[in-house]
Image (cartoon, rainbow, N blue to C red; front, side, top):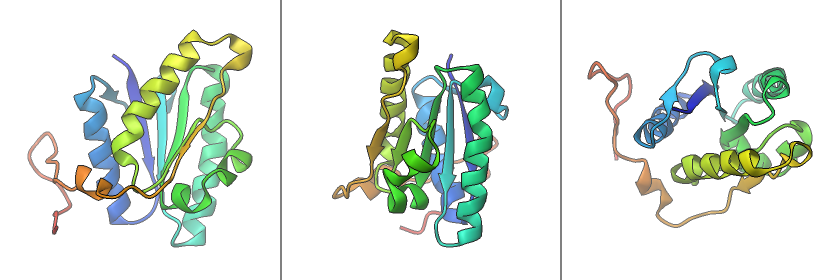
Length: 162
């Protein structure tokens, strides 16, 4: 089973969004790991409301890039407000980034990661980087992750209000 690691910076909404996307990965046969060195997919969900959160996220993304040096087939992605606002600019700021997914694209993150994993598996070692930037506005996409997901033990910190 492939493993995915999440790191979340920012507000409670980012935490909830990470829970939702993590559930989508589990439904597709992935396991969630708390250790980035075990991961096949490493995702960071970021906030861009506060500069401190952005700087912390960028620093962490650069630091976590060491895992991709050890495992060139690792899929490395950023999602959330910062991904939405910076888009392709993030590919310059974090050169090892494979995926930039905006706030209306969470429902596509798993598909993008599977596509990137497949592409890396089939590619020559010198040609592993084909990043995906998906930040376009998509009508109705907010409805794809609106439903609340309960944690394993049935308790969660967040309440859906929509």
